[in-house]
Image (cartoon, rainbow, N blue to C red; front, side, top):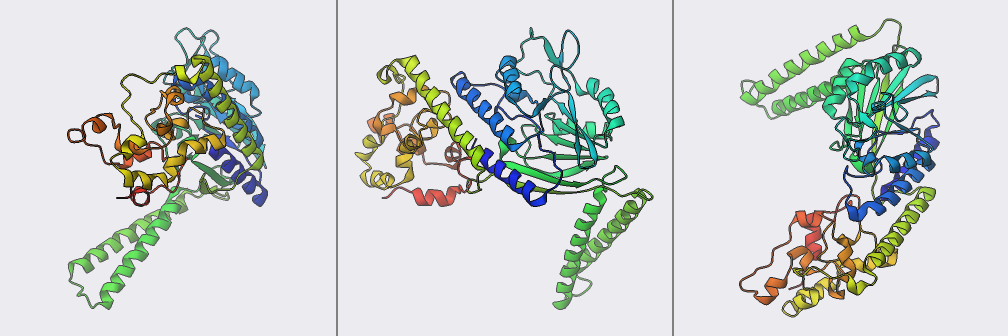
Length: 472
């Protein structure tokens, strides 16, 4: 959730600086990371989802598309989320099996400045795991829904936005079949921050999943109702390329390279080809320009949600309160399940022995480790009041994997930190027979289980390993 307060700050800053009519939307996949929730994480996931909605309410979102992940905790929970939301959740293709009508709001209209804007939501039509075969709803293919909906909306709208959790391939197909859809904002889970691309008369945009980037698109919508063709942007790239080629030619001439030289002739040929492409693009741009009407343009910018970014204070309060609720729920569920910490027994095959055992043979290394931040990792959670947060604890102790966080309460003190065995693997066999069982060397994949961008946006394996290297 940490990025929410960063995003809130950027949104407010942009609105205050530019004072422009605006629309704030999200493609979907907002509530949960996956379509399946670990049983041990359900309560925590519910609290997090409610906190996200509160934050979006404060940030003043207009609409959010419904993606498969948003339904991961079932329809009853999602309908409760919809009631808590001040913005509109959109899906035109989640329909009732009985009536064939949309279960949720299919589209909304907003007047943005002088532009009548329609916003549609589309949900990935692969059946969500949260929807059982007996549920009174289904997800219809977009081919069955869009033709009539887009036809009706285009009569009364100057601009149509689609919030889509479909794949990029499907969105490109939609763009080519429905030129009346002017903008598609996609939340397909595998997407990263994508440079806007023009397909037919539709601009496709995507930011990285789980709020790692916030995208800002400034649009100047022309009287033609058409985007300035991508050829203009491509033309700039080609002209820059021609400049680089000419620079290389001048450099060769300065060095008195013979014109018969293969390198010289290669650059001459490249310059001729690029010049022809520029000429063709200029002709295309002239032909596509409507008589007496202006084309539409845009500017796009992505803002990374870094730890160092400023916070929206009101949203930050919600983030802190949500984390507090998660920690209390984790503590209550642990006490309910185990009655006491002592009954939370570790598995018989638990293979971790703790740093004190390691130090009996590796005293110097243990001493160096004790001065590291890894040694105090668990106490960091205690100070922040998050030691029962199951999404945090596995990365702050030794020997606990995702899905087994309930065992963290049974760990001895020598495992309540990121100890030797986090990097080198379990040490039970090695401590019993060090000659036969060697310990592994740390690698980047081990570190990346925890040092993900949302928690450590400055992680550099080589540099950080050097800082952490055990003293010999």
